[in-house]
Image 1 (spheres, rainbow, N blue to C red):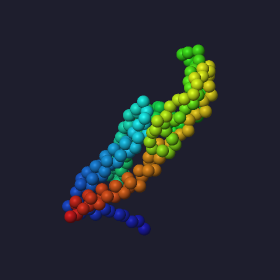
Image 2 (tube, one colour):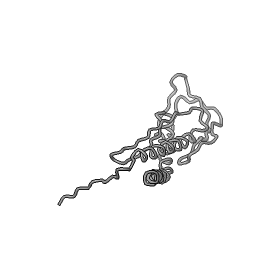
Image 3 (cartoon, rainbow, N blue to C red):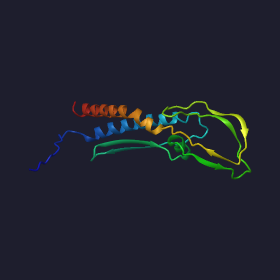
Amino acid sequence: MAFVFKSIIPKDMDIDVFRLEYLNELRKEARTITKEYKKTTRTWKHKPKFQTLIGLSRIAGEASVLVGTDDEQYRWVDEGTRAHIINARNAPSLAFQTGFRPKTRSRVIGSRKGGRSGPIVRPKSVRHPGSKARLFSETIADKRTAPFERNMRRANKRAADKVFK
């Protein structure tokens, strides 16, 4: 036996009211998420640019906010790096201080004062141990999922209140 389901939409229902509420809420969420990303680079000299993309699908009923960057250095910090060898290329040796305090920590949205310390060494090459992933993107997604869903339900209620007053 086959079943056919058909949506019954009242004639006076204005879909555009819902669309506008959803888009406004998506824009607010995009600004909030972008602020979270910018917190992670607050103390950096190099400032990555973050782009936003919001999506609303009428057919599938999906809403999405994408915030990200194509900045390679940010990706290295966010995702971490593997152990690798660094060789001197444009000079006879490398030169760096032996102590280091990172400006960011794993799963912490924020940035603090960091920097180098200790004596300067000049090896021809080093085996870099890699860097631990900070997981900013994952942490922000975890932090914002519940508020995003709650805010979209509220946007839906606001639109319904306007349409069905």
